[in-house]
Length: 478
Image 1 (tube, helix red, strand yellow):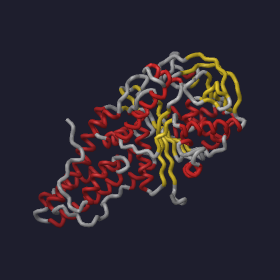
Image 2 (cartoon, rainbow, N blue to C red):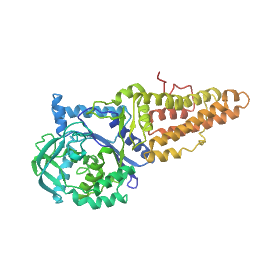
Image 3 (cartoon, rainbow, N blue to C red):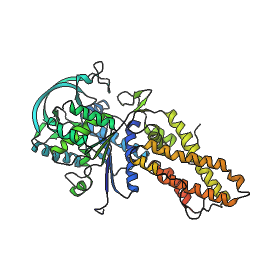
Image 4 (cartoon, helix red, strand yellow):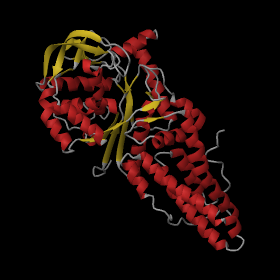
């Protein structure tokens, strides 16, 4: 790659393999895929990484319950994530697994560097431990004595651990976040993180004893590194830390980490502090998305109200699912999803909106222009508003802007009545159809990152030079 070519490194969280993927985990992965495609359109050198988080006590428990060894269990569930992302048209440059030897080696190098920094010490910790979080939580975070996310009562543990001097990074983190040297968005999440830091940071345990399914500390084999500490380092190991120095230097720091809003403390406080300790650059931006709900309750594997994205893809197609998830809920906010809402968007926006416009325009071009549109002309509408919104992760508003022009075009056809006008003013009909074809082509280019298959289908037909009656883009579902 030419060294002067701008790079763009985007990541999703890596997903815990205690159960199969669901719509909630598909959401940021689709968004990351869209951003990767957008930046490739700009000619940038893009690296898009996702993957699975496979160590820890919770995985060992889930494997045992399934009658399998942890690695065997992780292999099966990780493959389900890779398959689901493929079904959704998600194309990462790297699908990392924390059981990859390269990752484990990179983590060992990172741990040794962290130890050499003088920012670790051995101590004892006593507190409430949530197995679901694989972390200690404070009593103030409990609701009616249970973890609000997992609805389980935490264990009371007293352990000897290795600790990281997080407290020492309080001032520098506050400064970097406050002045947007380290960008956290949406603003509400930035405010939450700053509030948490200002309340006072405490040193954190980075290891646990008696956890066999994990990566041992190089200097203390009785301890394994906390699964979420190790998982955070995937962002470095996946691009070659400790193995491919040129690639690592090319892409690090990450341009953006997409994470769920429940992961902001890990990614916006602990992660940059660990990187500062080993004298690596910190990420440029963290963007926290909201949660989907069903009947007002967060979608959660532990609660059992999971929607398998493969089921929706089988019925509605990958593009429809991608469109629905990014259109229905503004990225960064919480929102309710359901198959009923997906079906309404499918029949309304996709079949009656874009699909109808495509069929009408191509049918009339075949009928009135003998399928020939000649050279492409400039689109009568400017869709730059949509592009700007997409780049700023405002996918919903960008799609609203595109569909406003789709509605305009359909209304223009209704008002112009080309089937009548062609009898008296065929040149006006030709001008109208060429304008509509140009708009459709521009719409296809704008939608390509979000609806890649549909956009390709539209472009292929319009570029063919001999437009014939095409099958519908979206068959209405009753």
